[in-house]
Length: 153
Image (cartoon, rainbow, N blue to C red):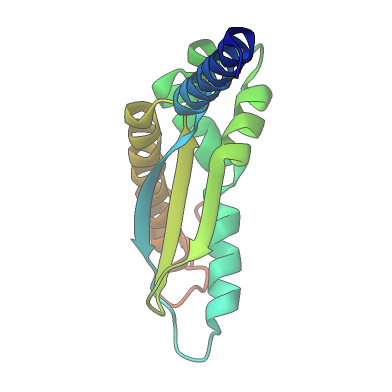
């Protein structure tokens, strides 16, 4: 082999190495890291798990819950969005809901580039979820039927 051929091979190997390292670094710094939580659900007798999961998913993705989290953590300014709706769409895109390993569990995963922020957001979602569930329990009772307000509205 001539000296020129060896230099071309060394140069090509170095170029491939630089491209690989830069691609790996880019992927590491832009990868969304998960924060995961599990919510335990109370499933009344005679009600299917799929129905309860749909209701709980709707609650977690509801405007009431997400707006509360966005306002509590001031996420609109943190992410540089112009409106709460933009932030809500961003949250819905990063929020994954799956059935848990056990029958009465719901797995909630939030993805963000900053894992600490993902954990903070997931904790805020959990706290807000508990508040909303308590309000529902007070209004509807454990059986899910609306309680009488005694004529007071």
